[in-house]
Image 1 (tube, rainbow, N blue to C red):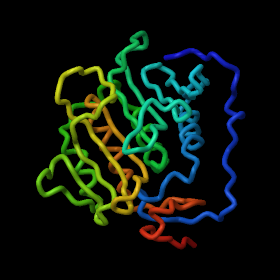
Image 2 (tube, helix red, strand yellow):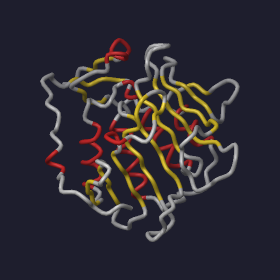
Image 3 (cartoon, rainbow, N blue to C red):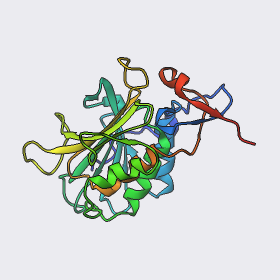
Image 4 (cartoon, helix red, strand yellow):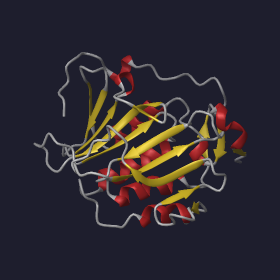
Length: 249
């Protein structure tokens, strides 16, 4: 973990203004991030007691109290892209506080619903890291299937899509630059993405390195597929026609 090397403060990063009234919408996986993902993630991690400082790379680094978990907002100095979108957030875990080697990493672009990352971070904070257990990959697809997502006919234990065929979660060969302590060949890791309009740019993408515990990915998946409406001031243009506005009393 890198020590603070400049004098920027979170207050130096202005919060976005929201001129539009709030709307409650569903499905969550197409609702976007309200252009406020950094702020929402920061609120979650600060609430968990994680320390934050800016780094020399113009990123914001959060570290858990036991120093085993880290989350870094890297959009200003994004290391690579996923599906043509810049990586915005990298979440990591390591076996002990003195180890420089991360056991696993998870990468997220903007557009990922902040509620989903909130649930993932809450589960990570409460887990035994770097291992949360030994559940088989099917636990991820089961979490999706239980909330109405469809299992892939050819890969029912490792791939699923939403009923509208816009968002997908599957276990795939790890793409380049996904860092993991396991240096073996032909490794598999979970990928997730939303493509509201076929052939149009992705709304968001996520990649989990091979050693991310399946239980944690299942938390991400369950939150992604949740039917509970989410509040948004701005709706993503590519998904707007596929969102349902829920009127709440």
